[in-house]
Image 1 (spheres, helix red, strand yellow):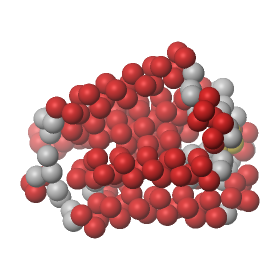
Image 2 (cartoon, rainbow, N blue to C red; image 1 turned 135 degrees about the vertical axis):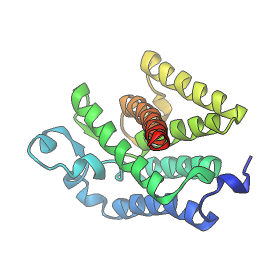
Image 3 (tube, helix red, strand yellow; image 1 turned 120 degrees about the vertical axis):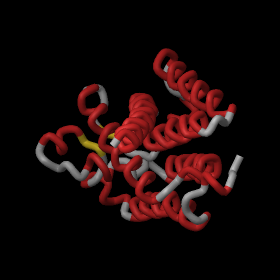
Image 4 (cartoon, rainbow, N blue to C red; image 1 turned 180 degrees about the vertical axis):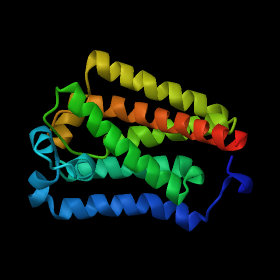
Length: 199
């Protein structure tokens, strides 16, 4: 499952990429009192505070919210870190953050948003598709399972227990747009590879 041929960078580098994201989230939590200047806030973005398209994903509503998302990041990293390369993972993160924020702006239902969960859904979708590309049978189940979860959230609503723990409504549209972002990033990667091959 973790063949040397597929690992393009060292184990330290693979973990360092996700660790860097986790450290940024921890730093944001330390400066939680400044969240009003950095969260995804629709009206502020309309007024030109475009950094919120990125920084909103790093802040969290409380310690439980942060812990849940860091646990998710650790699990996804353990599952798919053999695909992580610095440029690819950084590009995936930036692309997904902007895509999710853009989706939430166009959707129009959410005024404010914080948390890594949208990005986590993107990482999971992309990793599952990379599994499928590598002919790992688990990839199909992971990818389909992700969309079953999202469909249930969209039709039945999010877990009230989670909402209570994080002291906020669960942003199910961030989960949806995150999964779409991860899928699109994978598709773009395939297209670029084919163009380069033909060239």
